[in-house]
Image (tube, rainbow, N blue to C red):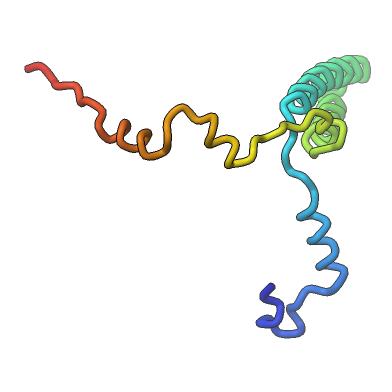
Length: 126
C-alpha cells in the first residue's frame, strides 16, 4: 500500500510480503464447539502434566525438575490449544446477510432510536 513512500532500505522484501499475505489469510476466529474442545483439552492436559510433574519431582526429590516439567508442559499445551487449528473450526457459524438480518429485526432502526431516547426517567423521592 504505502511501500512507495518508504525508502528502498526499509521497504519489505518480496518474501516478507508473501509472509504477511499468508498471515492475513489465516482465519482468526474459532467456532463455539472448537472453543469448548480447546478448553476441555487444555484442562485435561494441565491436570495430566501437573500430576506427571509432581510424581517425577517427588521421585527425584527435586522441586526444580518438577517446575521445569510443569513449565514445559504449559508451553506445549499453549502451543496445542491456543492457535486456531483446523481441528477447532469444524462447525463454522452461518451468519445472515445484512439485508436478511434487517427483515428479522423486531423494530425498524428509527423506532429503536426513538424508543431508547423517550424512556421514562425514575423520579427520586425526597
